[in-house]
Length: 121
Image (cartoon, rainbow, N blue to C red; front, side, top):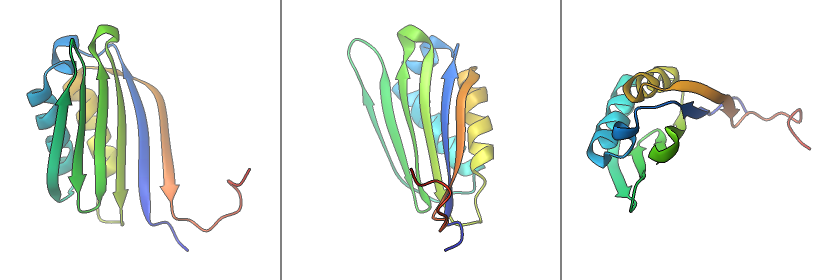
């Protein structure tokens, strides 16, 4: 099977702590990133933790964009998964990084669905 999608795992450090704790802003970021990636938004779900932190998932026809934030550490964990070949997950990655004013730490770009034995343990 050929590649069916792209999955980006992204850690952002040194983010704007106020933005990381604002669920409405994070929702706008996820949806803006989906638009940048040319994804079709289905639904966005947000949850704000007490005393701080946000989790959000933007469901798109092509899969999802998600984020978990730790404002007290200036840290966000981001997941961008897009099926098909029509979208631009790297544009979503750049959009989120810029919006949160963070620096990239760990980044992995994983092709999904390839029939290859090279990644088996």
